[in-house]
Picture (cartoon, rainbow, N blue to C red):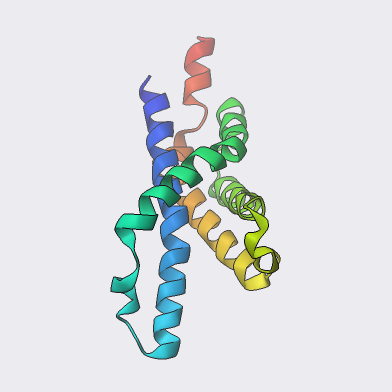
Length: 142
């Protein structure tokens, strides 16, 4: 039960990271270009952040759950696995969003933001839960 709680906490923290990283990158880059650092405070944290968290956590779980199960089954504990799976999950999730902004979907900058966010999310998951992958399966086998 403790391992399942660790996996859940790791997933929630990774989802939050995958949302915060691109937002902060965009806000900081825009602020650097325009010399306007007040953009950090103009972001509507109360209105859009909870909806973004809920959407990412539910939808990305469909992509991330198989990667987590594989890691648990075969005791995969390397940082690279979780960083790569985070990037793949983030890009797959980003490309599966509604096509109302279809021109942006295959923009290299957009894909770079997604890959960066996914790598950061995978790293956070690895720090919290991924380093001990496989403990759940080994206990069940005993």
